[in-house]
Length: 123
Image (cartoon, rainbow, N blue to C red; front, side, top):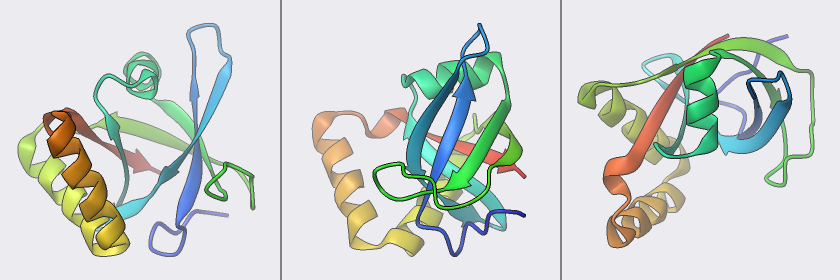
């Protein structure tokens, strides 16, 4: 089984601490030019964990993180260039519309817009 980023609204992203403990976080997912992506803040713990261990797992879930399907192993990569970040943000705007626009507006007001980080996933 695989995860369809066009169809799924939320996925549970499982990252791993240095000691191997799994940490699950429900996140939005989109496809930027066919590549599955999630977004988060650059200072989030999931970014720190991915920098240490690129192996992650994904499962379809509800907004609250309740698993709705099978887990899929993946490799995560932090997008470190502006063009990839912009493509990722645009993919979320296209998929989530006003909700993403509101999230972007709030991040601008809070001064966190520049901290938005896109994570590409290889399923």
